[in-house]
Image (tube, rainbow, N blue to C red):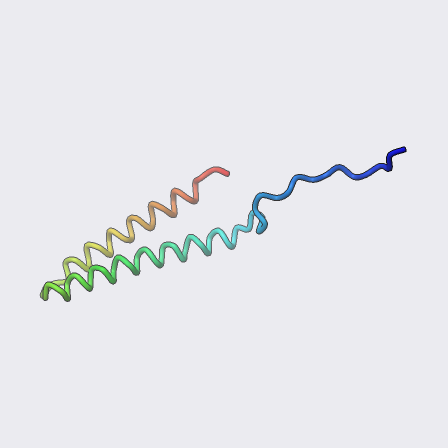
Length: 80
């Protein structure tokens, strides 16, 4: 005679669960890295070409902000 055993539960796909704090921390870190890398690249280009006005730094920083915001909004509205 078989012993009644509890039903087996499916293993969790995400071991951390749906931790909102972790998700938003990762989004903030991603934004920081993208904007920082774009600003660093712009400053490096301006130094390399001896620009008097930091056009590359401003342009790439604004582009980095736009890309970071786009990715963050895309992740924010992404459905599970």
